[in-house]
Image (tube, rainbow, N blue to C red; front, top):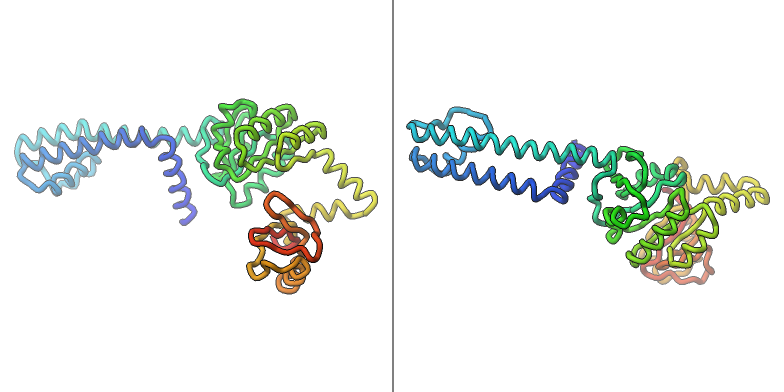
Length: 328
């Protein structure tokens, strides 16, 4: 039941953000017509304005309980006028809502709508093989996702995913994703040149957005780093490094797979540091988390700087993030 209510309010939010003018226009006309006929009915039938308004709503919605009826010809003419106009406008109002919901449904599937996620969402530009494989896992988290890609229809039917169809090098398409309010932007297209162009555009126009890029060629990886993309890596170099480690250390690939696989209970995760550890050193941190929570700290993230296995005397500051191997 709660899930149904959440979906309902989510749809109301979509309507209000995209079609509020259309709905308000029709609703205003409907309320105006009901109010005028209620006033006329109250005046000529000599009843209270509240009772007349109740009658007008009852008549325009075709409920017709019959508890309030006109007793003279003038009242009957007013009733006829309301039946003709009020019912028609009410039908238009309901048809407008139906049209909006149908358009939203098709828009979600075929990518013809603008994203209605306006805050703290994730924007993905491109639909590379890496995105195909990881999109479901990303949606399993709590974040809402806006996907911009030049594909025929949405790859996944999810209330947390908005699909926008178009080329990621088209500025008018990218603007629909509201990157300025996103918590993260991921750039990863099958064509590395598109990823480079999109990366340059996003970095230039959204300077405060954290950007991650996944490419195929190492030369593109270097170019993206040079323009200030926060995190860049190539699938080929990542795979080759794991392969090299596996050759010299058997089981290395199993280690990395288990760290990143959602099916395993333990894995790599990021946490806020417990407040009682602020001012303590990294040695104290390891002892506390291993003893109290049976988890293993492996690094500290301070702003944009990540320190893996820092010195034992490394002092923990307020705002630091803890990277650890523990319960997901």
